[in-house]
Amino acid sequence: MVYGWFIARQLSCGQVHALGFSDALWMPRIDELISRLNNYTKINKETIKYILEYLTFGRLDIRNPDIATQPLIDLENDHYALCSMVWLNTNCERNICVLLNQIKEEQKIYSKLVNDKEESLINEIKDKLKNKSLDFRSGKLQDTDVDLAIIDHKNKVCICVELKWFIEPAEVREVIQRSKEIQKGITQVKKISLAWENENIKLLSDILCIDKTYKFLSIVAPVTSIGNAFSQDSSIPVVKLWHLIQEIDKCSNLFSVHSWLKSRSYLPQKDKDYEIITTELKIGKWECKWYGVKHA
Image (cartoon, rainbow, N blue to C red; front, side, top):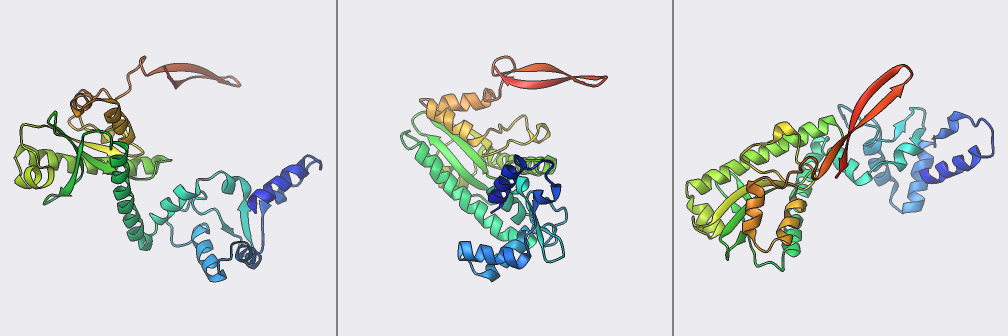
């Protein structure tokens, strides 16, 4: 409906000189919008009201409301206001996940969805590497979990992967939050590494089913973002999951992947993988030199 409003207004703009700005917003009556949605979707009106409450700006005690996650404006005169550009240029799936994670009552549901996603992720990894002669293990230690251990028995190499699945950060607050998640992952990985060094029987015999003759490395592998520079650790590799899986799929054995991670060859190198280019900006009498990053 918003798209139809947008197109109709675009067509009108081409025919009518100096079209008024008031029509840029679609402002339906609340009961009219609910009736239309009920008619078009066959969802009952009470459920629609419940959904619209989530999408209304500032509702549900959101401390810092965001027009991207709650794009419906209650004008408090029995009308809603909908901005076409906001509704048409937003990632609905991502934004509803962000919104649910800000509502205390919904966070448990969100956490369950994340756990379900992690299980699905492990199955996806196994399917991607099914043609490799690799063993996959998971299990619980006393104070942490082994999300996924990828083991090459032939070459005696084990890589423990701490999986991190969260929504791609889009602004500063989210970058900070996701970076803290990476730091938590590094803390967990260090516990696993310490258990390995101490020859923890639960880890070696019950979970991994290997001995100390294997080369071992524990890493953090987020799906979306590796966090900011301050969340990194010199002793623990942090690499995007599918970058890692691509490298494993490409290599003939896990030994070379182990070396790739230990040497941090997964990090991009200046002038080899990318180059920095300078751009001059001029606005009136003001001049500025800025930079950009270009794939080499």
